[in-house]
Length: 98
Length: 477
Image (cartoon, rainbow over all chains, first blue to last red; front, side):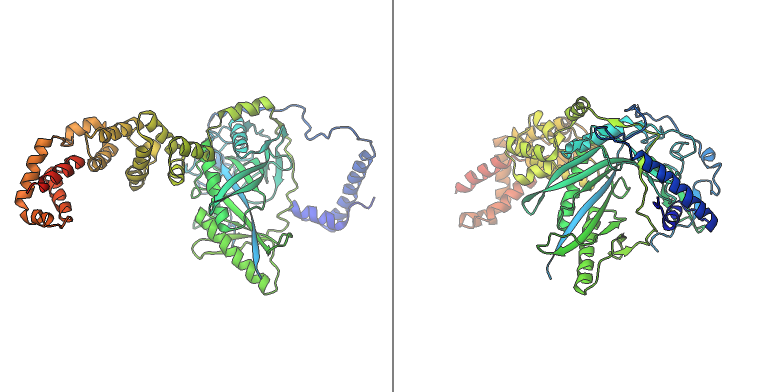
């Protein structure tokens, strides 16, 4: 049952960019452990000879044709932006290579 | 120690569909920022993407051209990461079941053919463009590029030199251009090549630690970046160090790669199946339909053209370098031009006119029929080859028929023996010195006399006839 450690919780929280206090970490440790235990239970089923399900939907090939149907006005597109100069969405400067 | 470089290549190519991959926004380069955006490509909550059929078909075509197996069943996945080049905090891509896999591309390096295995080619959406030059100290995000269909083509680590990498990219670009699925413009970013490089002691089977290089804007840049990385790895290993697995950026001005700050856990993308898009099933019939639409590909076309028209390997290579060029050539032959002459004109003067004016052959004013007609005028001695050069330039500027231009400009070659004879006598009389020289055995003097005759005829004298008559006249003492 000790399928998940505190480090795992912290790692997953980090990937999701969440900051958790100790209490939240303990609660998630318990809850995530329970979820994994439930999946373990499913693993008890004999699935020999059953094709894996790769996708939850049992339909395929839903496409749109390659037609331009238009876009939003820029003002509308930028209306909900936290910050904009009227042309771009503005974000804190990205320092990737320096 | 002697090392062997091991190189793999990732190529991202933007597919030139009319609309984006999951929405109906225009797929267009260079539009004003954030004018080709909608709730889907902006990643608004509650929207549903829908896959563009043209993207799937173009991707299958590329897969087939690279001898890939086309997956009967494939799906889209979410690749999760935080970066301001997309707003959903995931990119829709393909993970464990790419549309195309296990293909190969043959390349030629130093006269040898090498087979480069293609691991996979998968569909994804391009990301937004970040602009760092706004002056406000902030970065701008332009979502016009977000959702542009992108095909990622990944090789096995089968390349062993910068030269081979260059040859691979050239061959791949040629195929993509033949298929007409992308502009393949590296400067505009519609084709992006990211090599990964490692080195190992020669003879070793084990792979060394690799570095991946991004931000390269040209094929020659790829070659230089690889050469730089090979040198860098060698130095580290020779000094007893260990190469770090990392992504590095190419600085074209300085000619070196710079380690990019490692984003923490950047490589744990927690892929999972995209629940908003249904699986893609390609049955044999669909695959066959697409296969039938494939054009003749560069290598087979080159071989056929070389054999069918008895061209040299070099000429056949130049003629088939691009599909428009090869199409133009074969159309010129269909219009009756002899293969060798058509090749010479196309590769020589015509190519020079195209290059000088930066014109694409398919956009130029001369038609294959007109080029064939011009060559016919040389063949039947209406005009000389020298006149034809001027004529071709005139045709190139005006798009007029060669026959009409010949009449308009009075370019018809003088093939009247009597007329030429009179002119030749005139030249001989006004240049007694060279005539005497010739007759006293200095045969070089003839060249001068031919030149004077051509000058007198304004270049329109039939060269064979001028030579023949001049010889006869000089024999008479």
